[in-house]
Image 1 (cartoon, rainbow, N blue to C red):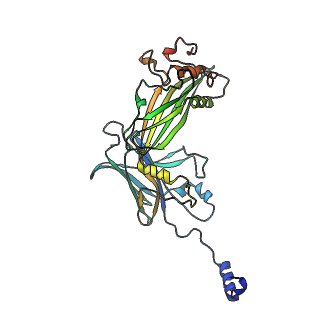
Image 2 (cartoon, rainbow, N blue to C red; image 1 turned 60 degrees about the vertical axis):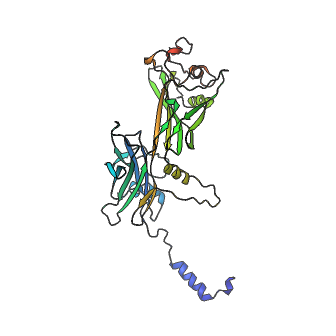
Image 3 (cartoon, rainbow, N blue to C red; image 1 turned 180 degrees about the horizontal axis):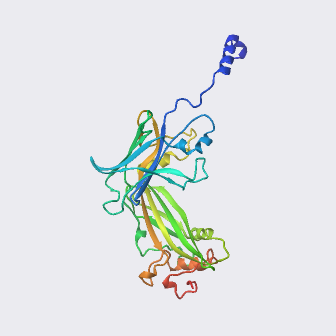
Length: 366
């Protein structure tokens, strides 16, 4: 339709309303809780992050720098342990401030408020793998805007790995003295639906003035949805390259020693796996993805996030444990230790071996 066919009075009316009416971009606001909590049997302290979404006129990035924008005015929360209809324990959550938040984001940092509960680690005190754990959060408690968030989870359990064997070692060199891959297996994933394998590699650097640098870095090896068992290949070449990339550049360093490799196997619940999947970028042309949460909010309020569980299996493999004999197991087998100290990638980085079985080798630590 061309403009000349529109009655002039209609055009006049449109001009008036377009000048006088303002669009309210904020609209009616419903409180939205943002909850993130994962229970882990390996922990004695469990942290829950409880925030609120915010909206208002002005620059949202400026609001994000104000801590109170992300917190409820008043709040109480608890976690309850049950088997069937029997309540075993209830913990009231306390709040604490931690200075560990990444400062590269748009939200306030490094301080953040977290809620937590804790217990002992004796057999009677740890979280019960047969129990169900429920959370109840009363947001804006005592105010007219009060509402309740609830959710529950079972625990992930049953992870096991052959690397728990004290005599097992990483083997990165084949019979032809060439670098090779090493298969790290998870014999059972239990009821986990998502498994991550990472290595925490620790070494020390010694200086001529007797100072010591303790160095560690995390190698995120693999993560995958799983069923039954899981294994991942660790490339020997990449292992030595990462060690070389994480040394300290300092002319006063005259010796380095690998101390340990911690194998960290983490299994996530089915709910957690679904939550992770739903928050990945969409590959669809429509960019549409379903939102997922296992939490419920009352009074027509909203909640996003997850209250679920994971299991962490941590296996420490020492480079040298000379207190239990000259031929005690090492995190690296003999050829792999020699490669660290004399090989083409790390051989010029001053690594030596303090393992007793290498005492007669030219790369033994003086």
